Length: 510
Figure 1 (cartoon, rainbow, N blue to C red):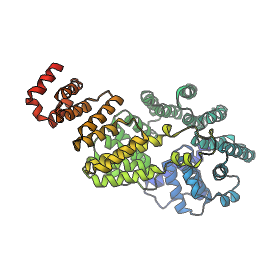
Figure 2: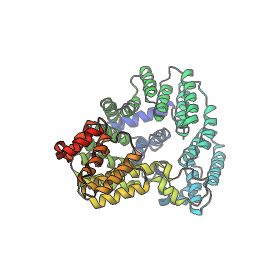
Figure 3: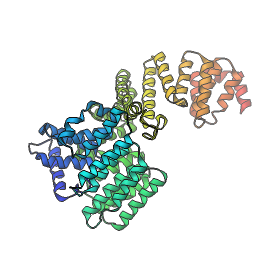
Figure 4: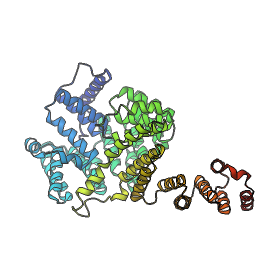
């Protein structure tokens, strides 16, 4: 991370020139190799991966033999996708030609550790030593520390990252606005490393101190707003962003974060307005396009959502998320075969996700290498969600046997998934296997008793179809005053309205 140089006046000017070039639909004017590299590092250092990847691809189209651009793109791929990227890369030639490139030093040591089945901890220590030796000539410890911190964060070494990066950041000056911006962006990076419980308190204190010291600095308020958003404190996030906008109402950087806050709080109309403005200013920000599409999706505007999601390129690192959302759009529009094709693409993408690859490839590297196991991995929940949607789509296509297999696969990943269990109950109901349906509904209710009125009603349907009238009435009593559940029961069992035995038991239960 090159925080110490990203906000000098020349870099800011070059970034503005490049964004003008993009907004003018890639006009003929273009930056030199040195200039476009500065812009690329600017985006990469801020963690704006969408813009960084788009900039790198654009730059390589103009300068296909520039190794610095290619290596920077490789490092970004590693920090977003993990070890599977390194499998396709032979570092020796690059490492020999560019031995003082921080990114290559880190990747070289890590890949050697994976190939030789040795400790990644030791590899990181070697990388730090090599970079510090290299930086003796540059006198710029911030660059090297944040390069290493970025990789250590990928490797789930949060405690070590926080201590190391916080120590360096605390020594940064705050004499000028440029200094404040640098420190604020460092705090954003630190917040990535310090999420959760006591660590969140540490990060909050750092931001409050920065804002107190610089109350009229838009960057400080923006950084604090981003921290609050990352920690799901949306009220405080919006408050901080409002202060930032009051200081600089023309700042284009605020549209994205206001859009994120509005979307997270269910204000999709406002989110769409902010994200559309951001998209007009930064048309290459594909991640923001996906967020805009998801806002349309949450507002049940499936046509607009699909029109955006259909344009997301397969090469984008969040392509699987786009395909998942597109599958929902198609499924809600009764385009079930197209929905199935989309969710299959999403599953293929997520199957090769970072955590799966890393855990399987480094299982023998020692117990201290990875602290995150499968149950803690975000990859697990993603796969569960994707397979659940696939099974639901198969049900719509009346492929019940295959859907049953997928629901059982979900339960292998998450044996307490009430959605999969109740869905299996629905399949058994469709087959008129009422005893197994009741068993599944009982399991689902035991896992998630709250808001289980629909399941109680379906359980009552199963009992009624078996002519166990008393149990059916008892199950209906469990729905409480749930009007929708009662309507569901009578939809499947309309004869129960005139069934004297059922009404007698039902009245007695009441």
